[in-house]
Length: 328
Ligand SMILES: Cc1cc2nc3c(=O)[nH]c(=O)nc-3n(C[C@H](O)[C@H](O)[C@H](O)COP(=O)(O)O)c2cc1C
Image 1 (cartoon, rainbow, N blue to C red):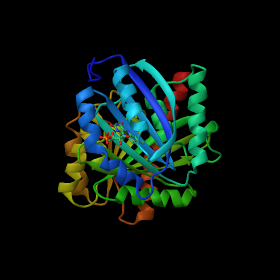
Image 2 (image 1 turned 120 degrees about the horizontal axis):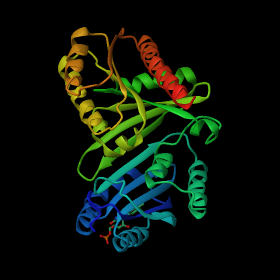
Image 3 (image 1 turned 30 degrees about the vertical axis):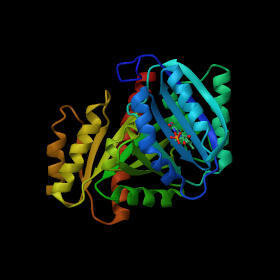
């Protein structure tokens, strides 16, 4: 067994430790990339590393022996302390590449992360824990609504991805975060090769549900850890800008993302330039059966935020009505 995509039963280990690295932690993790990839190529192990508010999380998959070796090897590094295993199981592999590196930058304190880790450990002891991917999502993109980790974080959740060629998607969620006085979480992702991408999200409370608005750059659409966090996404908003060539490149990346999804979200193509929107829609038609709606907006950031909220509001309402109907 190699831990490759054909393997159906691998050893999965998740561990946590307290960061003791001086200086830029993310740069130091990125510096280990080549070495870890070389070793993982030899042993078939796949690894995801997360840095969040003073903590490291490691997720390794492969043969039991190889996974244990990697864990022991990581323990020797002086840049962390108090390492402990928080989950161990046999099961289907969740990682798709030799190495993923992620970091989360938000207003969480180390105790917030410690609380989530304790919850995972407690559930593991009681054999109530789920798949490593669920734990990874909880740790790498936690719900930021106050009060933390209570009913709303597990209530019905709408996930909406907002994507743009440049920073328009992040600018948009900043406007929405400001309005709802919600904190933004910034994310960085890197894979084993040179690629790096940024993303950000904000959680907004509704009555009895929450909506996560996830801003993604075009490059982030390719990242497999991002794909993991978009599971269950209801809507995808493409901010097309006003350069047709860029809009079609963005739409091509969106098609690449949606192709691999069994259940596809609604797609809303929003922008001020009709020709640019048309370019994007033309590319999206390459994926038959997509629910695509074009929406005209002005260039002002406040008006754009209203347009996006209206467009996803009706998607979220439709999804909720469907759920109510199914559960009646
Ligand atoms: C949080 C953290 C996670 C690490 N994860 C790995 C890993 O998955 N694989 C690995 O080979 N090294 C990992 N390392 C680095 C190893 O401890 C070690 O420094 C590296 O493998 C280089 O070892 P060498 O000097 O013997 O070549 C990690 C270090 C830290 C601080």
